[in-house]
Length: 122
Image (tube, rainbow, N blue to C red; front, side, top):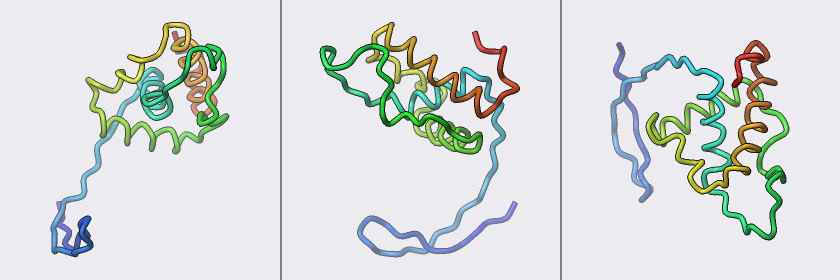
């Protein structure tokens, strides 16, 4: 494994020498893992007024389509940020009905990007 060297810029604008090792971690995500990763990105900090939003209203921020590479990038970022034990906490503030709609929308995005997963959703 190779150690890389260079400079890192800190918040104060100062550049300091640093060294790092670049790693690659293989992931084996099932459909539900991908759904949780997307849910973490698009529903974690959603705050809604109950009387202003119908349960079935799709959030504007949720794309109609995402590429497979886009989904994997989002999931990698969310799992890195929240860890495998806390990734599902995005559902904590959602009503049960709203969560049903969220899972429906998110599964559709994953299956569109990964058609071979169709039929493996619960």
